[in-house]
Amino acid sequence: AQKITQTQPGMFVQEKEAVTLDCTYDTSDQSYGLFWYKQPSSGEMIFLIYQGSYDEQNATEGRYSLNFQKARKSANLVISASQLGDSAMYFCAMRESYTGFQKLVFGTGTRLLVSP
Amino acid sequence: GAVVSQHPSWVICKSGTSVKIECRSLDFQATTMFWYRQFPKQSLMLMATSNEGSKATYEQGVEKDKFLINHASLTLSTLTVTSAHPEDSSFYICSAPLGQGPGNEQFFGPGTRLTVL
Image 1 (cartoon, rainbow over the protein chains, first blue to last red):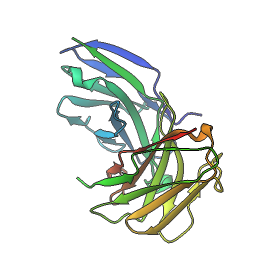
Image 2 (image 1 turned 90 degrees about the vertical axis):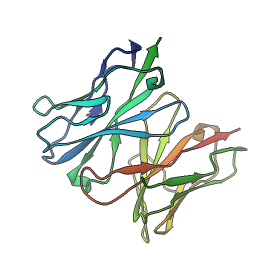
Image 3 (image 1 turned 180 degrees about the horizontal axis):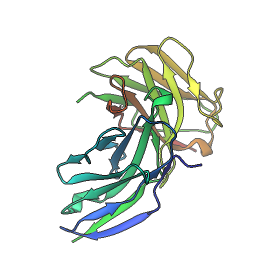
């Protein structure tokens, strides 16, 4: 079974609008971490936001927020007020306690295109 | 934040040659580093975990004799693609975690684009 599932291969959004990128995960661990990364065409991996499994509040970082629904095992990324520079690949990733919180496993990614 | 470098950033080689890619943690020590491979328009697939002073741990399906990993110091891990073939052409990215715990940040190198002719 896939550890991380991103069902949207591509998303389109107009500039200044909000967009939600979906991510569901599968784990039997009680303690785990969820991450979102942005990968522009240059290939670099840019950390956006982190949510711990025990965090009661949804994580926020500037225009990024994570809609964490633990019972549904979902960790959707919400980008508010989209900008042209947000066009990139977005990856959801998870780190589990049984790996010593070392291995980071990625989903298949969602390509976001922001139009003027 | 911490910095991880990779060298070279891109390499083109002939089929059958070996290529070495270096991953360095510039301002922190990394007892563990990770090597990922990313084919065009696909996700990052973990290839192996590089452990300082011991053998690397390879993911299922990754040929350890094909992808040699050496973690000789606390700041350097190398990946050698031996007898490279066109199907090995890919984007290789290394990363290193800083600290322990579920939320410790993992720093990625800028990646190495390998093209095998």
